[in-house]
Amino acid sequence: MSQVTGKVWAPVITPFDSNLEPLVSRLVAHGHWLVSHGVGLAVFGTNSEANSMSVAEKQRLLSALVEGGIDGDRLMPGTGHCAIPDTVTLSRHALDCGCAGVLMLPPFYYKGVSDEGIFRYYAEVIERIGDDRLRLYLYHIPQVAQVPLSLSLIARLRAAFPNIIAGIKDSGGDWAHTQALIERFSDDDFAVYAGSERFLLDTLRAGGAGCISATANVNPQAIVALAASWQADDADDQQQRLNAVRDCFEGYPVIPAMKVATAHFSGQQTWRSVRPPLIDLDDDKSQQLIKQLEALSFVMPGMESSHA
Amino acid sequence: MSQVTGKVWAPVITPFDSNLEPLVSRLVAHGHWLVSHGVGLAVFGTNSEANSMSVAEKQRLLSALVEGGIDGDRLMPGTGHCAIPDTVTLSRHALDCGCAGVLMLPPFYYKGVSDEGIFRYYAEVIERIGDDRLRLYLYHIPQVAQVPLSLSLIARLRAAFPNIIAGIKDSGGDWAHTQALIERFSDDDFAVYAGSERFLLDTLRAGGAGCISATANVNPQAIVALAASWQADDADDQQQRLNAVRDCFEGYPVIPAMKVATAHFSGQQTWRSVRPPLIDLDDDKSQQLIKQLEALSFVMPGMESSHA
Image (tube, rainbow over the protein chains, first blue to last red):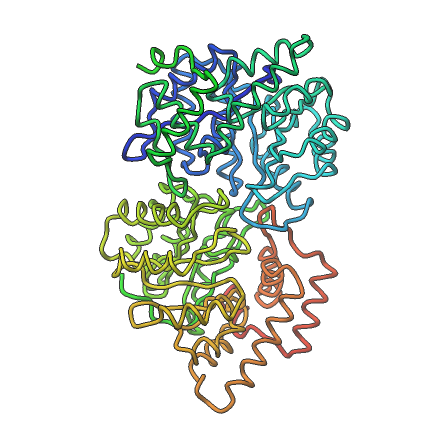
């Protein structure tokens, strides 16, 4: 594994059929569409419904992406589970697939656990994987995992595993926290990604690496454009336009809403399926979302032909 | 599967060796010790570190318990995972093993999910298992799972799957909630278990089924004695003595503390191992706990010979 290098990554949404089985070829098609727009694939993130899938399902999908021609440099799968053996199994598979890095949730079942316990978890995982090629990106998403990763824990992990702990995704939604991470840790060997493109410009200006953002699934081109031209005069205007699209999706449960948009622009209605406990958007809300997107002149260029 | 019938169940603690691998024969020995004291085995509960183990590990341990001579009537394994395929795999295995019932967490990764989403999750699981023998006990533990099971959801599940939804474990620690569950739902076809022996007497007096309690791992005899004699004159005194032992364990992180006690009374120090993110009690705290237990004249009769 080399350090991941892209500025914009999507926690790729996962297509299911009407029986809620993963649609392998459609995921590969969506992956190619995203890569063609310059977005790396953080498959198996929160917005991928990763924890609604078994380890075996994720292994199969990751293999299919690689066999389907997605380069390992464009892949940063989420591999963190509550159980150490599961995290190790999927992370090793990611290494076998040549992935650029892995994005790793802390164990999220027990609440109120200590930094010492979380440190021991990551240390045990790293030692069991036992591969110097591992590049591990921490995944801070306290509002969902309910297990935050403190600055002192990150410092301790970096000190113990300097070549392996390669970065963090901060999905907490608190810019002050992302800024603190960048100020304290960001360097050539540690990449700080914001968890939303809403903070993309601020992150790049502060010296961070970029963003890993749900809505990069649906609005990749514009997000990548800002990441490439963040020092241009119109950067703030670009950020405002990104925010308007994001506001639209955030008016709904984001995962079902992104799937409705993807279904609409691809013409493949099964994209709307989500696994419980998530529920799909009803027809009224779906139509309302599409109207709002149309009012923003929002499109997903090339989606229909790529998903045929 | 028949309805489970015991009044007292333990979420059985799981022994790991110094490499954090499950110690199969020791789990079987502990299971026999518990059953010999009248306690049923709710293996793979929160206090079993269930979510720190893979599905395959749990399948192997459950098979070993049955092959080791534990009767299926004494087994109610926890089978709830975030991913439907995992829950189905382990629940089917429990049916194959002849278990009396399964105790099922809601999917616990996503937060703020709707009752509709949780209903769809349980419905999909039940339909995929596709076996009328299934007896499903809901597992309400909002402080850990962060996904509560509402009374209206329970009513809807009972109405949709009247022969399958067989009861609930209420680990919320709020007696008013347990009482409301008993008043609304408790009957011959629906068993309400308190999640702590602290509520055992109140539960039985109100018409509930009993308790599924962590400290039944270490204090089975006295808890079972109260469950058998709850209408006796000294029932309140018995409850007070149970509470004193429980208070002692609750002065520490409960899982490591129970493992320290089990290590002490069995003479098998590897019992102290826990999987991260949990951490074991240090030597000072362990000695302090044992002194407090000795002051209560607490013993685990027969433990040393059964775990030799």
